[in-house]
Length: 579
Image (tube, rainbow, N blue to C red; front, top):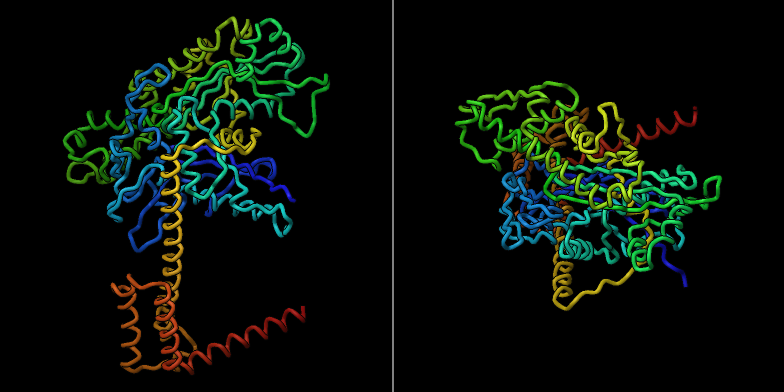
């Protein structure tokens, strides 16, 4: 009996984009989307009842979308955290006022106007994960090449590992697993993001610590709408063993939970023969603090101070509101490179006038002091306190600061980190951990496939989610096939019209009213309710009829065209033979 090969898939579902990497069976390859991008937009677009869903990279860009595009899918699962205590702080999700889609928080659903239907946040995430699964399978197939052995992977062989902040409640973790199940991914689990970061750090720097040495690392990960802070300690096995001898058995067992075991790096070790481990001393996360908060602060600043916007009547989630928020985001990026900057946002002011947004780094720092910088400093201070302070860190204190996430590229964020840990302005941050580290760590941590304990009520919900998603996926496939046939018909008619003016055989085309009526009638049918409501079988039948009628009208033209194509093929073959 052949043991199946499981392909581990590490997934970091971000607010705006999702990163995916494969496990060791495929050399931790980064999964590209269907367009070749390294990230996949975390969004779903519903183009209408008669159109296939647009998932991930095919979805409409959220900043330019209407209520039929749902973004921030992962945040909908954790929306229950809004106003609740997370790591000791009261959090409020400021992004909520900018949502263009109809999020019915009390019911946990999103209403889609083009479908006249509501979908739960878990169902929406399942749709998105279905697209991720297809991208993964495409990447695995490409890497495996033409191998046809028993190790070739199918969707049943995939095991998804989701990296999530430690503060995420059990309900959110279960929802992620249920969404994966609905996307026909039977093997999935959820791992704390801090463990993923520690695993990657150990992989990269485990051999750099000499015997009886240790390194204290502060890791700050600020994305668009969430921030995590962790204190790690990279220690040599010899010292770790000595430490464990000084603690009682109960404390030792508890501490062992926060130790990342050494990873097999092709059985290589350092010259002393020792292998290092990473200890997670503490971690703090906030699901409502991120670089997107800076955009919101600027948005409200300009709404209040610019005369052309102060009297402008538009809501935060309107098209104009989205354009202003996007302008603030661009200005934020500009100020990450320059001390001052300005951005022009078109047609959002009074009488649809263009509006110029101007700011300096110093102004933005003042505006964000309470809403962003103080909160970040508080998180770092809390992580230091939870780590045990000097007792745990020793005299070495924080020796390395690792920055990851787009928010940590902002100068004032870096200044705030230096300030809270008492580092000078010339202190250099490390960027050994890139934006894919969470997904990479999730794919690296070994875990065995385990059956999840699911009660009867949850099992019923999972089954309904799976049935719904399977039906929608089948419908999408039918609609895509319809679109292909529709495009074939449209291209066919366009070619016949163009041939009258550009083809060498245009004289062979009929010039009768009956032929013109055939072309016009086919065009009209393509945009009729009959075409819109036709099944795939009816579309195929219609296409066959059109081809038959074309042969009747244009037999001589088609024969001449085919003869010319055959002649060119012969000429190319003869030229190839001569070469």
